[in-house]
Amino acid sequence: MRNKNIIAAIVLIAFGVFYGFLTANLPDRSLPNTPSPAFFPWIITAVILVLSVWLLVRGMRQPKVESEPIDVAKLKLAAAAMVFFLLYLAVMPILGFVLATLPFFAAMMVLYGEKRPIWIGSGAIGVTAVLYIVFRHGFGVFLPQGLLRGIIT
Image (tube, rainbow, N blue to C red; front, side, top):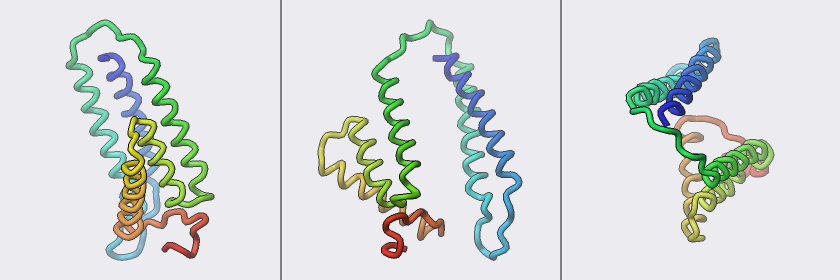
């Protein structure tokens, strides 16, 4: 696990530096009392770098042990989650944020073991509503409306 953490940390640090480089040249917004377009990317960059350095330090401090066998079930779970995420990204421009996020969160809850339909439905609706309210009305971010264009604002 030690080597995996060190390698993952190095890759994530490189990604964080690259992502920070890409966000460095974003234009400034001239509206008063509003965050610039680079505000959230810089927060993401800082979080990625801090957590990656933390992972690197923890990996260096872990004792070296023999490698564990690969758990095929966990690998399949991660692959299925990635497929769901890529589908989510593909259909969001067409369906819109709300209609794409509802089935995505429901599918992720089922994938990770939730079996109670009421929890799945209420969880998907709750997470979608909270994310929509926070980003659209809290941060002022325009989310894809898709099929609900003109119905929701």
